[in-house]
View: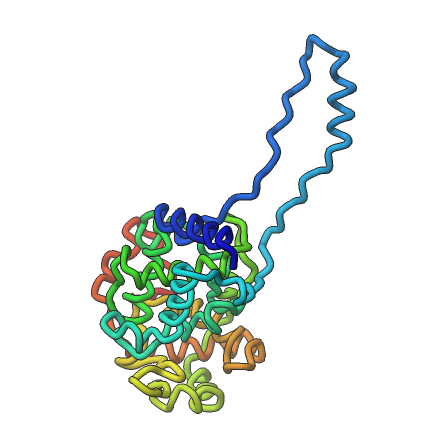
Length: 310
């Protein structure tokens, strides 16, 4: 990687962290608007019209940007590249690397599959360009670091990272690298979890039976997951003390059903029906799990969704 490329990355990341977005990508440069013809000089009109006719129209941006995983070879050399690789490690080995901030056995990639690169599984590609973002849950404009820490407190049932810490910088650096080719302000294909458009009426009893058939092998009879070395999960707990707390997005029926519909069973995403996904979600989201102490602060301006657990 050339020094010029490294310099570009240093500048981009510095701008990202300084703005608190985690990755405002450099905007595409556009041509300045042409001046309007002088109404008092009609002879200028044909030339202006000719110029306009010869200027190709700017291509329309797509409603959603294609989700494309960048080539690992594009990770720059030097300190920025080191931070990108460190961020990837933190997000894939969260329990092992950040035990003081994780209260359960989950990794960030327990939900954001394959390093945050899978459509409809919370991909991080393009995520830096959508922040700052207003979130009704806390009625504030959030930057990317806020969103990361939200997951640490809720999904990981842990404690937030200092926003200016090396670990947070590394996480933002990885997400910035993933987002390097996506224009700011353009949603990515497959962002978040693809909600089921016409939610069926769920049946938790049917979901319990489906869980025994399709989920027990990985997540355990009691939803305890399957732990590996150092207490981290090979397959995450879905309820109980080692799972995400009630403030997590995955504790909500609609979110859980969307994730299950397109990603579970692992490696067989899309094979369940809408009804099966909702039945399964209705079963496991209503099982006991850790509380969230600050739940009373959520939705201060109202608008709590129907599927919130509290």
